[in-house]
Length: 471
Image (tube, rainbow, N blue to C red; front, top):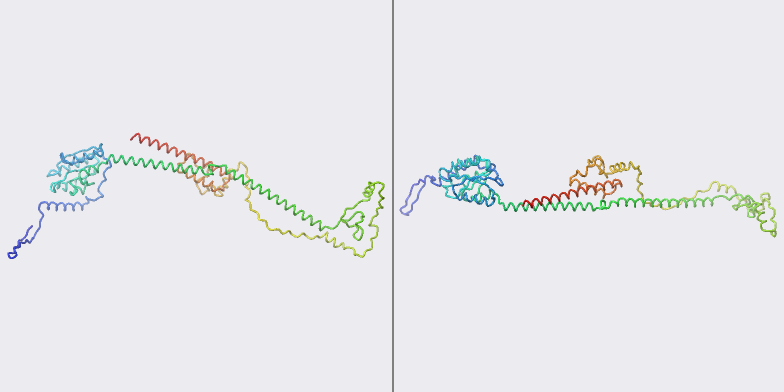
């Protein structure tokens, strides 16, 4: 500092008026480091995108440290406690003084050229600012930036931040922290592995159990567990339709018989009397010759009288009442024209008024097909009605020639196909042939799913036995 002193005698005070300030010693060094830091940052050497991630478990670790230093002991001991199989390539160099920068730079380049080394650690214990200046040197910083192997900086303590920490791929606060970072803890990894294995087994076992429960639920559906219900239901339907047909025929016959008897009674009531063929006492008078009673011949009368014996009086001679003139009477003879009119033009019977009958509509009878065409007709009708997939659906009908082979299906495909088959059977509406084909395919799909689940259990048991043997 350059200043001009001023002294006031009356008050006894002294002051300095500075004209120039210049850092000297440590302050000058820190100023130079800050200037270099700005220059390197402008070049992008501290960019996080340049940093390379550290390997999870390196087999060979390169270590740059001082000769017989505590930093070497901390790194090696802590790393081997965590992972005993780790190997170190150690390069002991000067870590302070004028020869520190070229030796550390040469050690980093040598370890970077070794293909066996997977990570490099530069470690040094704490110290004064002047002792840590080599790790803020521009030459050393640029050598570390050009290293292709992941680099870990473990210089000083937490408060020490040389420029090497900024350019390294990972900054460790202490050498012990670097040892914990470069290798994992074998006990922790075994515990994680055991937990992961347990979770995997539990997840697979629960998945198999859920799928088994779902398969058992599908196989317990009535459409698969009791396929005879498809035939029994149709048999009951056939019997019901036959009884309904018989009742309909009986009712039709009863109605026809009643209508016939009614019409016959009307015809008899409206028909004229028949012409008599013999004279009878009832046929005397103006209506002689027209009677509805049956006539009796003379021969029959004689035979009847003779049969009574000799005591019976002889019957009077039969005379034809048509030759005898009619008796005079005051009544006018009946008009035969009316009779003819009645006989020739009878009035039609009045229509019978009955309440309209409410009949239950019956579905049309199923169309009978020849045995050799039953399967083709059922498949055609099923596709037309939507029971089977149509032309726009690439999935062929179960049981068809183009249906996928059950043995070639994966578990998910067989399960989804089984769910679709059960849904189709429960929806109903399919013919008996289609229902039987669906049931057969459902049984085959259920067997395929069960085969997959049994295989999964066997593989899970084998894997578990191998894991226990390796442990």
